[in-house]
Length: 458
Image 1 (cartoon, rainbow, N blue to C red):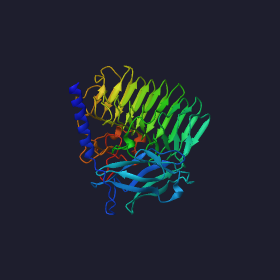
Image 2 (image 1 turned 90 degrees about the vertical axis):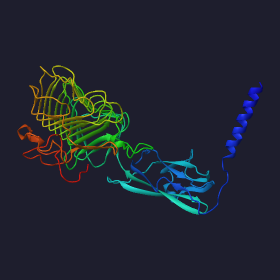
Image 3 (image 1 turned 60 degrees about the vertical axis):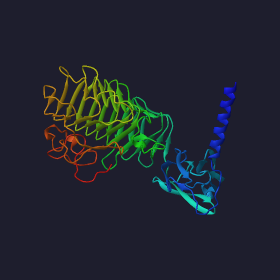
Image 4 (image 1 turned 30 degrees about the vertical axis):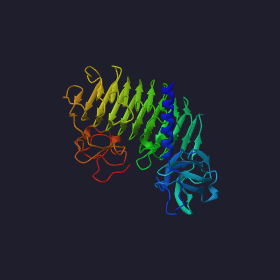
C-alpha cells in the first residue's frame, strides 16, 4: 500500500512539473504575428454545385508567448456558404479569440461549394481570408478554378449517345452501354469519374480523340493527396475503369488517356478493342486485361500496375510501336509486365519497348506458342530465336522518369538506344504519327513516342 501511495505522489509531482512547463502568457505585441504554411491555398479545379475535397493549411505561432487571433473571417461576406471552414476542430465561417500557445500551431481546413459560372471555361475565384491579431491583419488567399460540368449519375444509354467536349463530365456510379447501343465521345472530351464509378460496354464505344484534342478519362480528384506532394493524377484506384463484355461489344479508342483506375480496361468474351495512340496508366491491378478478346494497339503506352501491366488470356493481339513500362510505387510489383495466360494466346509485337519493374514476361519460355517479338527493346537479357527477332536485349531505354518528382513520362531522352532503332517496314500505316502528332519518319524510334530533342511537356 505504501508503494502505491509513493507511486501516486510521484505521478502527481510529475504532472505538476509538466503543467508548469506550459507557458500560458499571452502577448499583445503588434509585432508578434502568426505565420502560415502558405500565402495562397490553391484548391485547383472545383466542380460547381458539388463539395470540393478538403484542403488544409497551418497557422504557426513562432513566439514563446501565446497569441490570440481576434477574428478569422472572409473579407467579402458574399462568399458565405461558398467556402466552409474548420479552425482547430470547430466548424463555421467566422471565428473569434482563437488562442495559439507559444511555439504551437493550429490547422485550418477549407472546403468549397461553388455555384455555376455559366461558361464552358473555368472561372478563377480568389477569396481573401483575414486573420486579425493584435490589431494587425494577415491574409491567406483561397483560390480555385470553378468549372461547370455535366453531372452523370448511374445511367443506361440506349440507342446512339453523343458526348461532346463543351463541358466536362463528372460521373457517379455506372454508365452502361447495352447491346446494340453506341456511345460516341468527341475529340477533346474530359470524363472525370468519382470513386466506384465505371463504364460498362455491351455495345459499341467510339472515342474520337486527336493529337491536338485528346480525350481524358480519369479520377475526379485534383491537386495533391493531403499532407503530401503526391499528385492525384498519378494515384491509382480512384474509379473502376472500362469493361467491354459480350459477343457484340467493341471499342475503338483514338488518342485517349485512361488513368487512375482499379482495373484499367477489361475486355472479355469475344469483344474487340482497337487502340490508337492511347495511354493506359496507373491501375491498382492491370491497365489492360483481355480474356478471350482481340486487341490491336498502335502507338500506345501501357504503364503503372502491380499485377501485370498487360494481361492477355486467349485471343489475337497486335502491338505496334507500343511502350509497356512499369515504375509502380504504391504497392510491391508482384507480376511480370506482360502476362500470357492461355497457351493459345496469340501475340505479335513489333517496334516496341517492354521495360520496368517486374519480370519481362510470364511465361518467359514461349516455345511452341504463337508469340513473336520483332525489333523490340526488352528488359531481359537473352538471345534471338524463333519467337524473338532483332531484339535489343537488356538495354535501358532512358525514359524521362523521376520517382522523386512523381514524373512518369515514357518519352525517350537523349542517348536512348531506342532512338532510330525501329524498322520502318514493320510500322503499320496508322502508326505514322505518335500521340503528340510527331512524325515517325523513315528511321522510326522504338516505342510509343517519337524522340524530340527539345524540352518536353505533357
